Length: 568
Image 1 (spheres, rainbow, N blue to C red):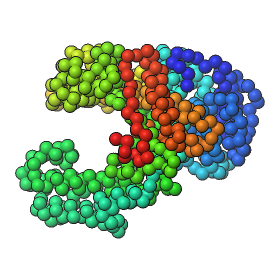
Image 2: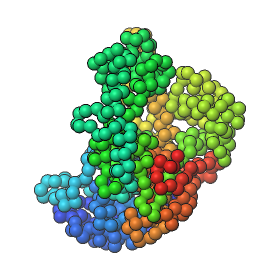
Image 3: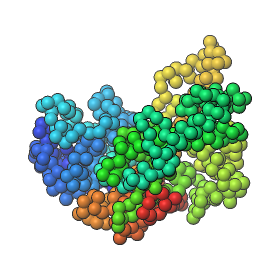
């Protein structure tokens, strides 16, 4: 990935598109001019053709990484970089800085269709165009030209180019992590379930420990037919005993004193383990000693990833992390970006005080040391309230103190909230823009202040406006944090490939897990120290790419472990 502000010089693009029986390969220079006659490549010869051209370090151009790259990985071919046209199209279509482009103004097309979430078809089915297995995508070359034109005419071409490169690199990393898989010991996982839940029951039967807890709850709540898996039933039973609660959310239950609360919380925790990572999860998601995470890059409007396939790749509870064990002679290097979103806010706003608060230590402790709040708990509550728009309770009470201490940071999120309340659009550091509110939202706002509007309509509209303002307030921070994580991941994956060049992906250090601000690398033990150094170096480089020279530090907590649960 080029540094922010640089341009591609002598860049070679290789465009792949589906054709009957295989693929069309077109080599282009950085002005999209052909460098060689286009050629047809049979499916069985595509990996070799890609491997040969990859030696020239081109940027591969295709409609969807999730459809092309797994076939190459299966054949042992890794590529350094690409342009995922579908992911990039979504960004350029909606970005404020490219609103005047031909791409943004064009009517909806196949490029705007939702990305497929089901697993890709088998390799021998992908190119069976004559049989109708897969419809040919629109011309990727024409789309590439439109995208380059939109980037070049944007308000900040270098930032937009960096965003598209990082988004596409993330798609490569997602495919690689799914291919490689996270080391997973099924026997250890089964032992965890046995200790927590009891022996595996027959289908449709509660495990022994859950059944015992259910019986205790029925007795305490004096409700013999209670179904503890039904929140409405549990809520009614609690209220019959005179408990004034509005939901069965765990945080609310913890504030109540009653003999039923402890077993109810324990039941909820174990039921979550059973449903999210129980025996069925294990059978469906772990094979050959690996959990293969299924990510959806750009699956959230802020640019954060989503996950699909039922595996829950973006949240692995601590209860099952003991089962994640490195192979013999290997290690897991686990890196966590400390307090990422508050630090992103400090860098976005250029707030010197907040940058100093996070220099060399815990940012929340630095906020306390500045005198803005009394303790670390208050600092965390106040900062989360600022980023997520909480105006009530303790966070609302602390907000004025935070605003006095860090005026530029708080002004940035407050301004973003006001834009959202007016129905406007905000953008991240690199240029991803928030969606506009719906037509129904705009209609409600317009009608709330007319002559015939009643108090109820006005209150509803104001509530909707504040809600959308909370969304835009957080969008700029969360979206920019997602961009930083993508830049970090993009730099790291190529740095890892350089540690053991020429080896297959899974023979050397490689990414195996990503969770928003955390990366996990599986590496031969002899490379663990080098991997840790690259994790730290690429994190610093991500900050430089995003923000240029900045006094804001982005520290990592890094652990080299054999078992994932030992990292924290």
